[in-house]
Length: 451
Image 1 (cartoon, rainbow, N blue to C red):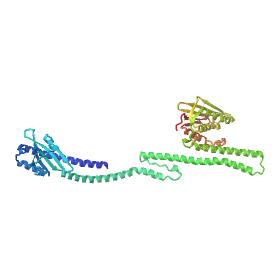
Image 2: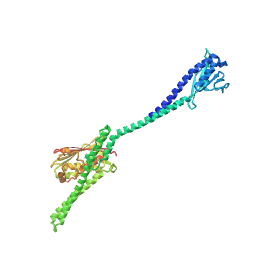
Image 3: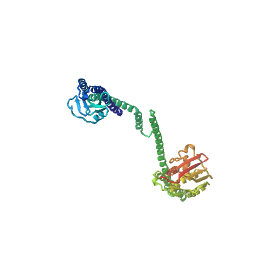
C-alpha cells in the first residue's frame, strides 16, 4: 500500500509540474510576439499602438491575468489593471530581465505564474524595457483537485483489492501451519508413536514436521527410559529388602535357632544391606552428576597417582579371580579435574573390566597426554558387549545380561555415572567391543577445565 500512496503523490506533483510548464511555454510564445510588436511600434518610448493594447488585453483576458510594460527607468508605462501606471517596480526578476534573462516564478500557494521577458530594441541587443505577465493558475489547481479525487478513488479500490488479496494469500500460505497447530493440539496421552505428523506442503512445513516427529521419538525414548528407570529403581531397591524380610521372618519363625544358621542368615542380611547401600550410593552419585557445573570441585591433580590409587584399591578384587591388572603410563600428567568424580568414573570402568572378565584374564589401563587432552584407555579380555547393546550401555539401569549382572552384583548405574562425570569435565568417552573378545573404553578429558 505504501507504493500506492507514493504513486499518488508522484502523479499529482507530475501533473502540476507539466501543467505549469505547458502553460509557461504557451505564454512565453505569446509574449515573444507581443514583445516583438512593442519593439517595432516604439511603444516603449511612448508611442501609442492600438494593436499592442488590444493584444495585451487579449492576453490578460485569455489567462485571467495581468500584463505590465516597464521601461528602462523601471517605470510602469502600461498596466492592464490600470492601477500601477507611472509607478516604479524593482525586483529580482526585473533586474535579471534587464540583464537579458527570461525568468518565471510559480507561486502555488497564491495560485499564480509570473513571467518576465526582456524587450530589446529592434535590430540590436539593447534592452529598453521588460514585459511582466502574471496569470492565474487556478485552473491547474482545479485540475489537480479533480485528478486527486480520481486517484483517491483508485487508491481506495486498489487498497481494498490489496487487503483482500493479502488476506486470501495469508490464509492460503498459513493453512499448512494451521494443520501443524491442529496436529500439535491433538497430541494427547502417552501413545506418542501414533501421533507423528506429515505436512509436506512447503519445505518449511516439511522440515518442521520432521523435526516435530524426531522430537516425538525422543520423547518416546525418554518416556520409555523414565518408566524403565522407575521400574528398575523400584525393583532394585525392593529386592534386597524382600530378601532381608524373608531371612528375618525365617529366624523369627523358629523358637530356637542354631548359632550356625543364625550366623549364616545374619551374614546374608548384611550382604543385602551392603547391596542396598551400594544402589542408594550409586543413585546419589548419579543425582550429583546431574547437577550444574557449579558443584564441580576443580583442582590441579596428578592423574598418574590418581589411577595408581584406583588400581591399588581394586587389585585385591582382581586377584580373587586371577585377573592381571596392569598400568601403562607414558608421561607425567597433571590436569584440572574434580578428583572425586573422576575417581568414581575410572573406578567403574576398571571394576567393570574385572567383573565381566574371564577367569585368569587381564585388564590393561594406559594413560597418555598431548598438549590439550589426556587419554585413559581401559582394555579387558572379558566377555565383550554385543554390537546391538553398545549404544545403550550408558543408559541408567541398562544391563546387557540382566541375570548375569545381578549375579555379579552390579546396579546398572556405573557406566551412566562414568559418562556423566566425563561430560561434566567436557570430555568424551567411547567404547569398542566384540562379543567374546573383550572391551576397550577410551576417555578423553581436557587438561584445562573451562566452566
